[in-house]
Every structure is written in structure tokens, then in C-alpha cells.
Image (tube, rainbow, N blue to C red):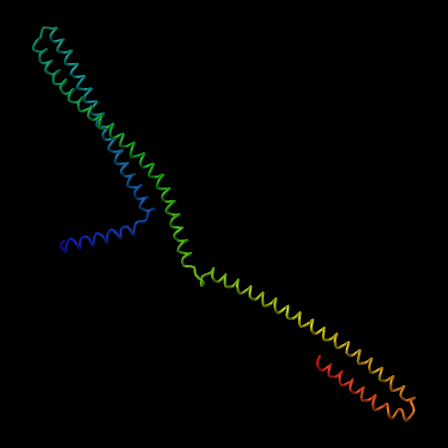
Length: 257
């Protein structure tokens, strides 16, 4: 294969690729309909010209036929009058007009066939154009739907975690996390409040018990004043030691709370 053939093939391939990529179905369909409409106009003009020509030939044929009949009558008249020479001349003219009429009749028949064929072609072209218009609308609708679907697929393909949908998903997750933290904080605050009230209630019981013991101790000291001196000197240190021990135990319990 020569270099020129290879270069030519490459150029034609690139041109075909460029044309294919530049073809817009909707525009191509519109242009195709326009071209067909132009062909229809030319076809109608051709049919009109053929019909006009047929009518001219028809008129010429009828005129030649009329002339032939007229010369036939003249030949008969001349012969009746005894002018054979004039009758012969009339017959020559009749023959010429009859030959002309016969030729025109053949041409007329041929043109009639041509006109009929042109009319059939015209009707077929009109039917094709009507069908093409219907198909054009359908193909344009399909092309528009295909383009919309392609754009949708491209849009969906470009979506990622950084897209709008990804942002919504992240924000939804963040809101759920904030709600969970708020609920946990509320539960912790409620638990701390319960513990504080429990401590207050426990402290109140201890205070009441301490006051009761103080009152008991105060009553015991009054009873001790009526004891004899000897018994007081012996019982007082022992009772004080017991009270101090119990008081220390109570302080220890309070410190542990």
C-alpha cells in the first residue's frame, strides 16, 4: 500500500469521525425534511410541466385530426364537382394531417404514461414526507429523552461524598450525633440531681440522729447529778469514754459519706 493511499485513508477516517461527532439527530432530521420538501416542489413542477406539455400535444393532435377530416370532406366535394385534380390535392393534404395526427397520437400516449408515472412518484414522495414528519417527531422525542437520561446518568456518576447528597448525609449523621450527645447530657444531669437529693436526704437522717443522741446525752448528764459523790467519780470517766468512742464512730461514718 502506497503512502498516498494510507494518508488518504487517514484523512477520510478523521473526516468521517468529525462529521459523525458533529451530527445532531434533531438538526439532521429537520434538514432531511427540508431537502425532501425541496424535492417535492421540484417533483410537482415536473408533473405540472409534463401535464402542460401533454395538453399542448393533445391540442395539436386534435387540430391535426380536424384538419385531416376537413381535407377528406374537401376531397369528396371536389370529386363530386368533377375536379379530380383538386380532389387529389385535398387527399394529399388529408394524408399529411393524418400522419401528423398519428405521430402526435403516439407522442400523446407516451406523455400520458410519463405523466401517470410522475403522478405516482409525486404521491409516493408526499406519503414518504408525511411518514418522515411523523417519524421525525418520534425520533426527536426519543433523542431528547436519551439526552436527558445521559445527563442524568452523568450527574449521578459525578456525585460522591463531596457532592450535595453526600453533604446532606453527613449533616444528617452529625445531627443524629448531636441529638445523642444532648440526650446523654440530659440523662447525666438528671442522675447528678438525683444523687444530690439522695445526699441531702441521707444528711438529714444523720443530723436527726445526731440531735437525738445529743438530747439523750443531755438527759444522762442531768441524771448523773443525783448520784452519790463516790459513784459519780467512778461512773463519769467510764460514761465519758463510751460517749467519746461512739461520737468518734459517728464522725467516722459521716466522713465516709
